[in-house]
Amino acid sequence: MRDFGVEFLWGAATSAHQVEGANTNNDWWVWEHEIGTYAAASSGDGIDHYARYDDDFALLASLGHNAHRFSLEWSRIEPAPGAFSNATLDHYGRVLDSLHHHSITPVVTLYHKTLPRWFADRGGWTSRDALERFGRFAEVVGGRLGGSIAYACTVNEPQILPLFGYTVGRFPPAKTDRGLAEEVNTVLIAAHRVAVDALRAGDGAPRIGTCLQLVPMEPLDPEDLDDVTTTAWLRRLMVDSHIDDLRAGGDVGNFVGLQYYTRARIDASSPTLIAPPRAGVETTHMGWEVYAPGFGQMLRRIADAGLPVLVTENGIATNDDHQRVRYIASHLDEMRRAMHDGVDVRGYLHWSAFDNFEWNHGFAPTFGLVGIDRADGFRRVVRKSARAFEHVARTGEVASLRADDGVCERSR
Ligand code: BGC
Image (cartoon, rainbow, N blue to C red):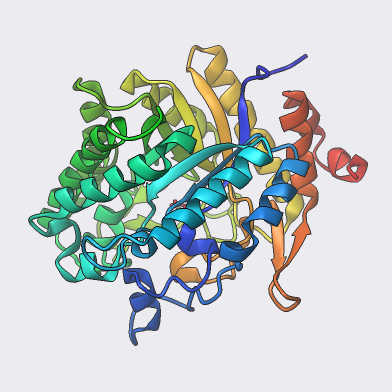
């Protein structure tokens, strides 16, 4: 019996800087090439997806995907303030055509972590005209590409930059200032609304949403006042402020994206504010705890926003593909249960379609359903987990995955 309806969206996600290659005009490229940052490697050629998108989408279609999330690289579209590149907009037009040609529903992110250099140099999201600039970019995208976009994600994880870029200084612009973090968080909440208005004025009628990474958080030591107050501050910054804004009314879009990976224990004395997982728990290549019940909790929490939910990211970096299958199975099971309890989930996009550039960690963590042999001309290597996922996408049944290795052995 089907666990998910025939209309359900099944697919995977990427972002421009992580796969395209040669995105030399954004703040991350600068970060990767500066001495003394946390970046382990350059994104370099990525996985050469800018050139290979059509073959890549043909492959994903053959793996049963009926939806795909990718992002537009703002620094390519607007390489200098107000100067929009027609050639780049045409490129993304062809990318969208290719998805439609392969019967894949496009889910398009406007801003996924990278900022044009000129925007970052003016102070990024703290500059006075940041929202106006972003609104203009969204307007151009809506006007030129809106008619081909089924789902538009305005801002990817508006809470992660305030944490990693402005609180713990691990991402550009490497600030450690909680006041600024709150300011940027507020601006990014507003950026979503600005983009909604801009896209509504454009071509077509994309369904629009913001994409929140929700992390269940607990103080490392419930008796430690610093841990307790820092946890409360982070919950407000990263969860409550965003959900409250979506509930506040006005046009906040048509759906909300949920991205879920792990839970966290908050240690106020750690430079990253995050304690390592408890000894003995299952972890991923990133050192994150595998904790499927947290996915169910966050699906129920995000439902408070009062919008249909699209899972826009969920996945695992691992060298053990059987672990990936188990991760998918346990998380889809949680999703099925949350839906049974009334959470209106419309689709699931796994992170990621391909192994890719994992920010400060470079290419070492492998998140892909499809691996990339970088030593052999970026050859795409279909993993057994991709076949297992295909089975779910085609049948709408998660039960088969519980057999874990069985599915892997049976698959083509
Ligand atoms: C981001 C992705 C990233 C993934 C795994 C999310 O925070 O949107 O860009 O690769 O998590 O870290």
